[in-house]
Length: 181
Image (cartoon, helix red, strand yellow):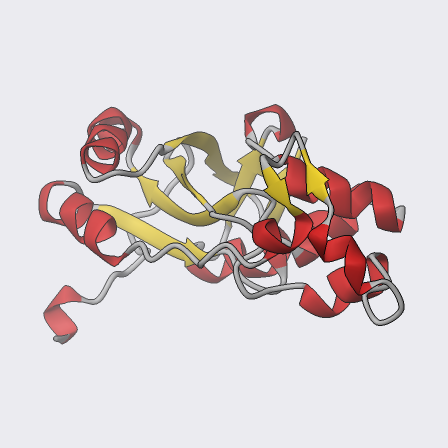
């Protein structure tokens, strides 16, 4: 239904980026994960329990991908959503810009990213630079929504009422792409 298609024409500086948590790596970065943990030669690594994960590495890696359709539709019934981006392969740097209006950039404070322990394990085991982590993995953010600042609290509340532990991740500024600061 073309009338229901999202457009970013009203996106502007000061709008807010809301994060919906991921359930893990979802379906992205598994080639790197296999290499980092050398699973070809050490498949037993998948059976190792990690207290900070609360499960084995294999269980953490195979956590089912979250589906966001119902919570996002609930928000869209009440709030004008200006952009949506599913954080898949390509992480923050490739996915978030797809929903941004020309001349708009996403500014995200790293401290606002709720990175699960699984990603810290991957980074440490592979000695992966931070930028590469954010360019490969979702880092705990499965989807983002962009809304007006005055709608942010209501959007987060609706998402929480629909089972998502959503939070404000950052904001829209002038520029291009994603700034992680």
